[in-house]
Amino acid sequence: MEALFLSTAVVALAEMGDKTQLLAFLLAAKLKRRVPIIFGILVATLANHFFAGYVGVWFARLVSPEVLRWIVALSFFAFGLWALRPDKLEGDRRLAGAGAFLTTLIAFFWVEMGDKTQLATVALAARYESLVTVVLGTTLGMMIANIPAVWIGEALAHRINMKAMRWVAAGLFVLLGVLALFAPTTGIGIGRGIESTRLLSQTRIEMDDAFAYVRRRADPSTSGFTTLVGVPDA
Image 1 (cartoon, rainbow, N blue to C red):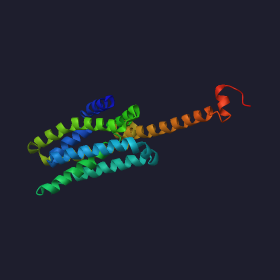
Image 2 (image 1 turned 90 degrees about the vertical axis):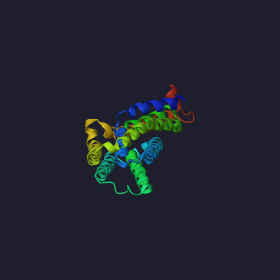
Image 3 (image 1 turned 60 degrees about the vertical axis):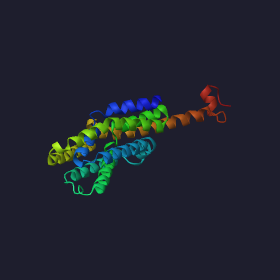
Image 4 (image 1 turned 120 degrees about the vertical axis):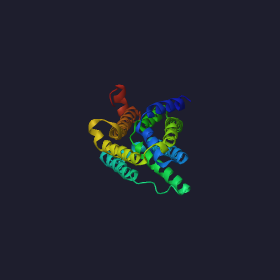
């Protein structure tokens, strides 16, 4: 229970004023589909945080930080172009709902890449060695922080100039893309998250090598055991 409560509290507090909370507000104001957006946030968070726990370190080994940085940045730039397009599905509620869900799912998944809440999930899972409990907690924290933003965004949608909102949303995505490219040299935001993921991977490899070395030296069946305990080899 400690892992669940701590994970919830840490992520809920970290999300306050974060870019994903602003994204939730902007998507709700633009798409005006509260329920699909909330479900999109839920599924994206579960997928992203499980990805962080199970695959994040492996992916960091497989893909260099530079390649991952460009993948994330280009995705943000593409969303920036999408944000400038006027809605064309407002007449079909089912299609609009599906579009809102998929848009939110993809946007939140990529925005969470390298974010502090994703890195917190990795750290908490390592601390408590209970990935499912930690991911449930971090997901609950994300929903606590973002559901109010969705409700407020949709409630204010009719009072907002949607053309201006599209430009604000596009500007946010472009800014995130720029940060993804240049933050590694400034220590800010997404780039720092990508670099931190790489360092986590490197640290884990070094620790595995160290433990393997100690086990070999301590194995009584090898001559290394006598060296480790200070007895000359026979």
